Structures are given as structure tokens and as C-alpha cells.
Image (cartoon, rainbow, N blue to C red):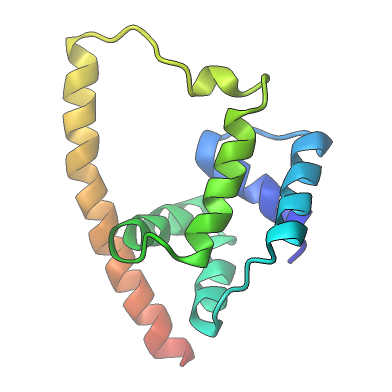
Length: 132
């Protein structure tokens, strides 16, 4: 898969936004410069992740907990850095005023994230079993 399509899919996953050509080009140049190589198993997971935002969510949750330094996570963080430093998307990352409901939401999302890790764990195990 080419870097431009990856950039589009990752940005949809991270912020649910459609990015412009400039951001796609930045991602492409970063991938060319950094030459992030995926191991065989990572490449398999990456192909599955690029098929669906939900699959990406579960596998990313698994990786963030069990393999936070993986090459896949590096790809995601590069796109995240590009989005964060682009003025058009910077507002997504700036602090906002919070209230009690925000605290409840954070606690709920913390609980749900363990569910995502759990589902991701089993998805990775099934993918490994079926395709190795």
C-alpha cells in the first residue's frame, strides 16, 4: 500500500478528518526518510488494520499496551505529529475548558480502553493462528 493511502486512513482513524495533499506528502516524505520496516507479523497486522477503523482501534489498543515501541505505532505517531503541527488540525490538540462530565467521560473511556485491549489481544492471536 502506498504512503498516501496510509496517511488518509490513519488520519481518519486518529481524528476522523480528511487530510489534504500537503499532509499526505509530509507523511510520504517521513516514511521515505525514516524507512520504517515492518516485520512479517507486523506487516500482516498492518494490512488488517488498514481495512477498518474498528480493527485499527482494537489492534492499536493491543499494541499500545503490549508493544508500544512497534513499527506500527511509530507510523501512527508520525501521522499524529503531522496533524498536531498542522494549523488546520491544531485545535484538536489544544486544551479546552473541562467540567465534571468530562471527568466522568475520561473514567468511562479508561474502562472501555481495557475492553479494546482485550478484544485486540484476541484479534492478534486469531490473526497469528490463521495466517502463520
